[in-house]
Length: 477
Image 1 (spheres, one colour):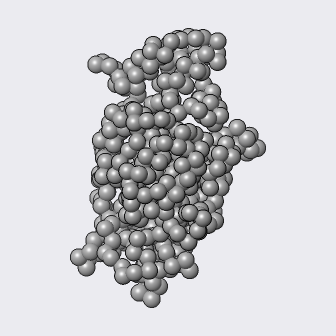
Image 2: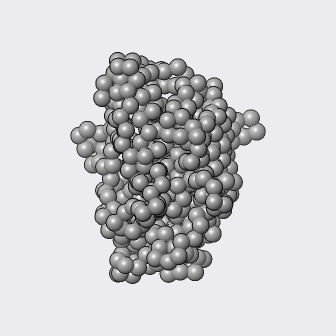
Image 3: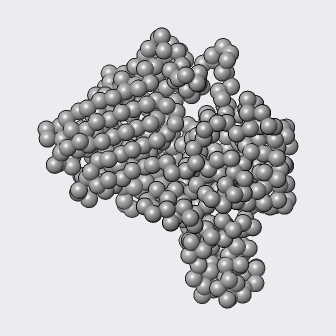
């Protein structure tokens, strides 16, 4: 866990994709695929394919699945499993494939289904902001059966975000353009007034054929492999090139936060309405988040105009200690309470606490105007020295270089120290650079980094009445 860099290798958004041939016309509606875009299914659907094939004595790998989806025509996972088995020389009837797949995915009376392992990819703050910016609303266009779609929304409290959904049973499947056209019709707009986001060429082909703007997004697995690839081999066999070839206007990182660049705030150019994400009673800037999954249950609250009060009970002592640094030296009042699956390890708890805290900061910032925007700090702790630079940019990016040598610091694994900072930056929608310049003690290296983060954040969120929107674009939300 010495050096971890979260670097964007994906295609960047340089200009808003055209709508009806006019770059100045923003889209009216957003259509989202579910699996790989909203839902992280690496441990559910994809594992069900592998284990179903295994049941019939066929070895199928994740690379086999990715290659099939990159080739296109692989939107139905039951049929895909049957095809992958046939490609290995084993021919199995469709019904036994489907029955075994569903048993694994749905579970039995005694064995939990793989569906319980699914998590949400995008930060809730990003989803809620996109919902506010889409005049016609957001729809889901998925190859899932409707009962699987309903289960995921209920399990993760997402139902309020979407106006409608087109599911497996409703009609022809992607890459046919029908699902995209149907979703647009239900939202009361033309496909040409929509952006369709997917993680496979089938999604992009369906969008382009229907007349919508197709936007690709990498799954967390694809992005991790690409980020860690030093020789470009992953890019050559990954999903980005096939999506661009299929007509994607751009390919984004997991969580699609850069979609906010394509959907301007609904109040841009007019009178500003109070932010639904911030307190409007004249008090301090407050953000409150509740986040519940099968792995963790978290509540987080941040007051940007506080006095440094902290009430953190994550179950991980060192993480509580770091949140204490953020509160004390940032002059923020912070509350975090978490019940997580620490009997497994620290990953889910640490990551989800960072995401919830980041979302709370995002909500507290509201419209992101009248603030300094930038903050830089250098903080020592004995022999260790860390530099942190923050930009309240609404463009999540993290460059984290802690240079740790130990495997654990207290109850927190060294790799999660980096991941906590990355997750916080993603959910808070900030650009964050953390560099430990020197230091021998890993505890000191991490703690001085959180102290520097606190000071840099305090400077960045400081009120500046004359700043207006601190961006030459005129938009920073």
